[in-house]
Amino acid sequence: MSSPNTTYPAGELTVRTTDYHVAGEPFRIVHEGLPPVPGDTVAERCATAIGPGGATTAPRPGALDDLRRLLVQEPRGHAGMYGGFVVPPDDDGAHFGVLFWHKDGYSTACGHGTMALGAWAVDSGRVPAPDDGAAQVRVDVPSGRVCATVHRAAGRTTGVTFRNVASQVTARKVPVATSHGTVDVDIAHAGACYASVSATQLGLAVDRAALPVLTAVGREVRAALAGHPATWHPDGALLSGVYGVILHEDLPDTPRGPNQRSITVFADGQVDRSPCGSGTSARLALLAEDGRIGAGEELRHESVVGTVFLGRVTGADTQANGLVTEVTGTAHRTGEHTFVREAGDVLGAGFLL
Image 1 (spheres, rainbow, N blue to C red):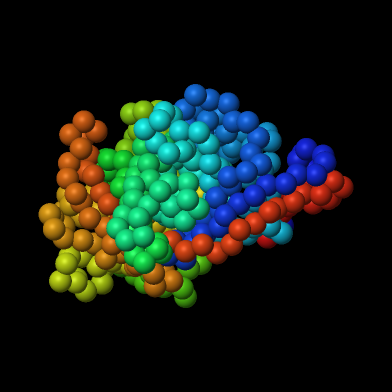
Image 2 (image 1 turned 180 degrees about the vertical axis):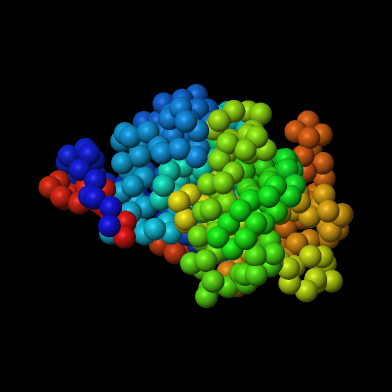
């Protein structure tokens, strides 16, 4: 168990959130009670929260990170919690901005979080939407501007399609030694940097029974690629370094295209319960380069808990020298919360087991 955080400001604190799950992965939307976050853009605010070392380093101490730990750690959260701080957008072209966070810090992209934010914006009335049809919610995230198309029927949200920033393949078949043997790793940037590994090549199945081994291998691959030039992003340290390792296996193709099951291991061994939204974009870029998915086809992408995202390549982004991808899934509200930290609470921001 980590030591209780004793640096959290004394006195009572109240913060309000709305929680969703997207294909099983939690997302805690913090929309009231945030401390000021310096910066003129979402990327600048993220850099302020993280510090000078980039997104793969420990976050900078301060009131914002104390709040992150308060909401992600026990007794208010858990080691698999994920969330975002709603902040102002870069300009009036977006509805709002967000800083994504997890148990170990911050991330520059989050597809499932963008889906949750789209559903929340429509469900709460912040963005008008028809009872039947669709509404677009534009969100500024640290890696750029993304869009969530919220699908509606009979006054209810039935699904969300996430359009990501451009996805780019930066390396193929990088040999990495693991405790289960050497494996070829493919690297792609899709708002964050993802390393893709064939679990089959390592003799592993992507299922719940193999979770401890898959998590260990994911951590080994991420550590081995630290500093690899293919993980560097031209826009600088904030977007550079491996964020997640995707261990995948092929399932029988569907009539619409490829079918895969995967698990994404990110941060310090945190596991995505969903098929990973931005990670699905990375998989799409690699499959497209292999000629395994084309116009009009879709990737059926299954998670370790059996939930599914559907991914498509919709075109090329010539300016960013990458592919435009869309990922569709479901988002469901799980609760609305008022979290309190009472004065004199010796656990401060909490702990993780």
